[in-house]
Image (cartoon, rainbow, N blue to C red; front, side, top):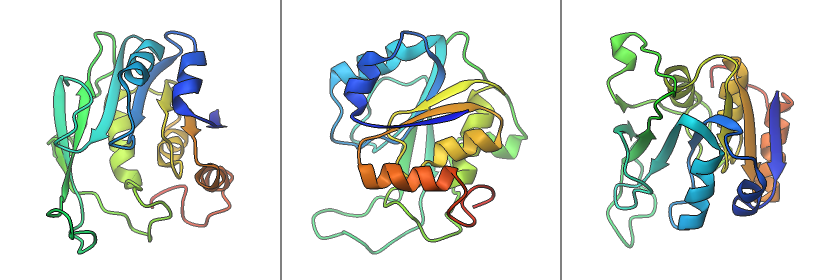
Length: 194
């Protein structure tokens, strides 16, 4: 069951029941989060559930229990106002009852350099392999995973591939439609092994 919702994350989170999801995995816009949004985000995770969130090093949304790193492909874009950044942090808040499934040691280094195989369909798209690794480590089969900024739906696809349920929220209608097409299999090569 993959559920995709089109609307404002802050409003939709406020309407969700407390403890209604097992984990959150998301890549939010780095400059648009309010403390109230974060309060609601932590409220909807079951007591003891995990929250995994991408962020820039300068803008950590909460004090994590673990910090992982994604080393992105170097690019020459957008260096007019500041130096480029090729590393994103992944904040992990581990709940007392949250899943932790050790994989082969090579998958547990905390520093990952996964790459997109196909040209991106979303400007901030993350590699499917990276999201699948996070899901394997921090959730169990059958878990409900929330991505409140689902963009092109990578987290939802990863959950579908790994037998987890997912709820995705996307405010931008065109990106919502893109994620919907992806989940319906209308975008060739975008479901498994991107």
